[in-house]
Length: 224
Image (cartoon, rainbow, N blue to C red):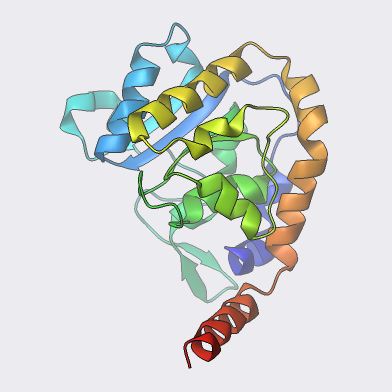
């Protein structure tokens, strides 16, 4: 994602305005049990019309299964060209067409239970300087901070990250979604701006391959 964004610079296509038709993007992706919980939260919300949602692969959800085009360059299901020769899955780029319609992100990671399973779903809001509420494994946020990122504790109540039971953790995370629904987004983003700047800069400036190599070496040496 770092290499793709360096080439495409999609952050420059993001709207900085806070007057948007939707409160949250909820790009749930492929159907999974833990994502059903999030979708049910949306369906029972008094503000369900304020969520821009896609949920692929579940026939029970009808129109919500539609694919939302992320960029002006995208053709549904086709890779996006970058560096003139390389191809990227469209799920790995900043979805600026969607983000420009929504204030915040609900992030539903691929796994609802594995705490160290990080994918492009976490990477996109970090790259895009967006406030998000995380629906993932226990300690997903704590471990993200261990990689040098910052989260929104102090702005949001992120104690949900410590809850072991998945359904209870998600219920508490959803309360933070409801909290954001009733806040002034200009003030919320003003508070979060230093965090958001740090996260994008950290993601874009860190040599992740070198970090991974060093960690592997440390594990190898400690096992001897």
